[in-house]
Image (cartoon, rainbow, N blue to C red):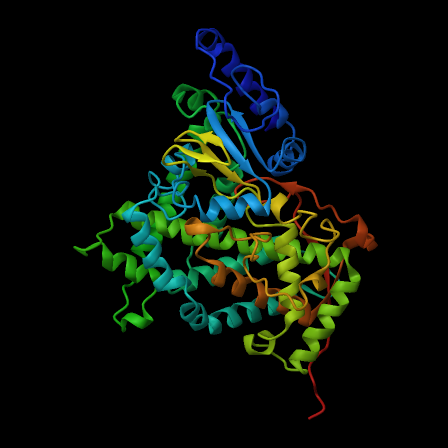
Length: 496
């Protein structure tokens, strides 16, 4: 993959060098701090070979929390501190409310008609409102409690059936669980192509994010073909489209009251609506969003939480003890048993601090020229909010690189810090609308995994030897799948 990126840059440099020599240089007046750059690729040479969010963070330490990067053709500002995140996501929120056009959005997201990538405007507002009311608000999330409990219990029994002391691929187990929950919540039932859907989403995630040739030279369409990215995305799109078509064709429209409709029922109903009509592609784009964004981020958080707990036996044992105390020996735990369990919530918060689902928030784009702190920002400038750096800012977090769930004791922080020092779901009008759903889909599965089982690494590997290498994409996953050994724990109170 890295060789392909280097080759792509080399091709771009070779083709455009003469053209760029004839292009007048831009004035440096009132420009943000930036590293030294070279022709054609700008600052990309600083990031080749790095994991993007870590590479950008290292540059921010040298050039400041508000800096400029020229990534090929794309002028980009990078925000890496709570102070500037708060300033831009409040004062300049609507100025940066747009999304830059991407090859992934064009091909996979049905010409940018999903919630995540749609340009700011009436269509995006209506679509976000629709999905929030029909799937993502607190009342709707609560209504899915029973299906979350059923699916978690099913996975507990599957793990037990695999045999105590035998290694299991927990990454696949978690991914399957979250996919089942999302499918039933959004579509009213599980889907037969769920495994294929998950794999296609995962492939899309790997190709999204980062700084490849197609993203940094958006106007050079032939490079999109030359590097093979357009062909890869087109293949994924065609396969995704078939899966989504099957979901729609297999769906029986609910004849129940509107309160019992699934999101898919509502979307299909809006195809005939005169006030806010949706095309078939619009419906497909939202289905892709709900399944893709919902499954990948939640399963990734659970994986990282289990990884951090394996590396921290103290925190692991503390959480297990509190869960089993809260469960009081019940055979099946329910959400009511854990709703006030603050240490579980703290573990999830600390995991999202260290491993935010999207460490570089989905890019925004400047809609109109503006001046920030005296610096002139041109329209179409790309904005990257570096949540990875913000969540580890030493001015706000003591010992920021360490996993310490207790740091959230007596803290009011939930999904956003008051000073924007904690942004796992982003901020402003383009923040993730699925935070409530996401947290519910993380807390109960994690509680089930730790209530019923003790866990260790295979082959008596020491807890501090667990590989924590990241794989960058739209959501940062583990590079290697998490394989652990479950040891059954008899917690059922049989005294009665």
